[in-house]
Image 1 (cartoon, rainbow, N blue to C red):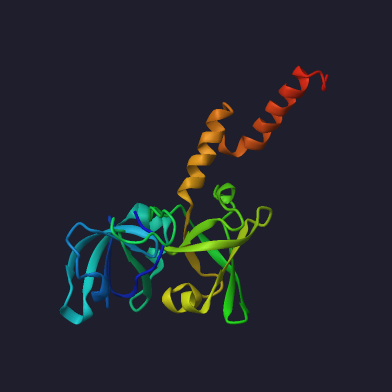
Image 2 (tube, rainbow, N blue to C red):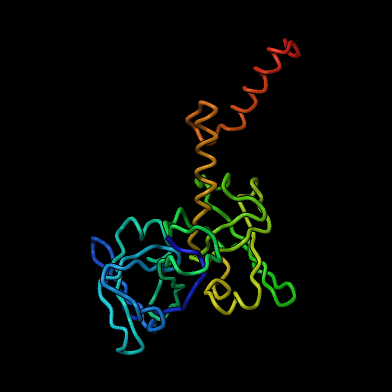
Length: 233
């Protein structure tokens, strides 16, 4: 489990691709390797990955992870190049403050950066989900979303356009990679897991199987109540 509070920016130093996946080496990572062990989980741009090798001292500290084809298909990590920076967060410890939100680092989908606008010292960013996305029901204004591993607050959601927006204050712009990504670039999205459970529970309670049919099910329930009260014939 993670919090979505990025601890450090690492740098891609080596990429080895084969038919089964990709080995990614991330350098300049010493600040998060002091308590590292083989098999530990580190969220890399929001994807929970397993440390397969590491050295906390050599060349500023580095660690290696393996990306399965599933991870490459679901995230933007297959598009990263040597020299790119990545958001890093270790799995949360029981003794630390919980400052973000519950993040599994299981990426749901990618989104595309549609717009970037300065607002004073802050930066407003708007993202577009693919047409096939089913994530919109879990995105609400002032709710949580994880973008490239960073826990952020939604400022706007447009279901018709399949877009959502966030704002980055100056401090956040300096601590994560998001402000440096270009228009048209992809980001990794994980929606709030609490929202997923609530949504599924409501669907189950209404006796439906299709998560997209909640509105129809609610209307059916209301119609049944009105008929029983004789207000609808």
